[in-house]
Amino acid sequence: MKVLLVEDEPDLGASVARKLSKEKYIVDWVLDGNEAWSCLENEWRQYTLAIFDWLLPGISGLELCKRLRVRGYSLPVLMLTAKDSMADKVAGLDAGADDYLVKPFGMEELLARLRALQRRSPSFQPQQLQVGCLILDYGSCTVSRQHPNGELQVISLTKKEFHLLEYFMKRPNVIVTRDQILSHLYTFSAERISNVVAAQIRLLRRKLSEYSCDGLIETVPNMGYRFNPSNADKTVS
Image (cartoon, rainbow, N blue to C red):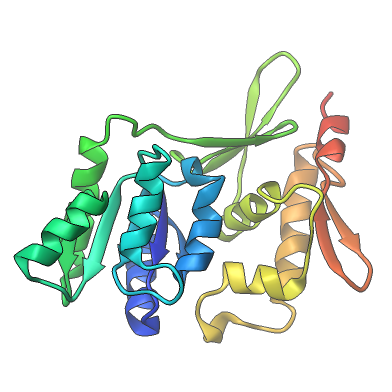
């Protein structure tokens, strides 16, 4: 299950992201409304749930809700805010939020509300991302290689390898830099080791090679890396 968390308070955002990750959610955490809308505008179906802070730099959480509903997007949204008056709650719900949680809140209540949103959402289904012969399943957090006969072979990946492969599969043929990958994979500064990206990509390549999926992640000299889906197709046999 994948969650878009939009929270500009670093401590709170880090705490929520950490808790959700421990509960097996896949979390995309962004700090402002403009970046959130970039994630949602064309790819809202990749998310199971969204958590918006009301007051955000750029586009507010309230405006994000309105934009989603105007376009007919059914993504369940939980609104976080310090605004606790009845008028504010009504405004948030009328804008399209599905639930409302007032700060400060307990993490267990947050998790309970997310579970409730999942149960209430008629469109809740495990979602998949497919590029070439690779299928990434958000519901089970697995990646499979599809053979021409339709048979699926599950590729054993760690959580970090899953996130890294997802990042590449969502950006086919796009050159991404080491710093972009670092920012996506590692939220906390303690994990930001200088050679961690190269090491993680080396491990992922080795895993993919074990399943006859070679050459998918290309090194672009002096620029970064690129996921080449045409190589994914070539490896199918």
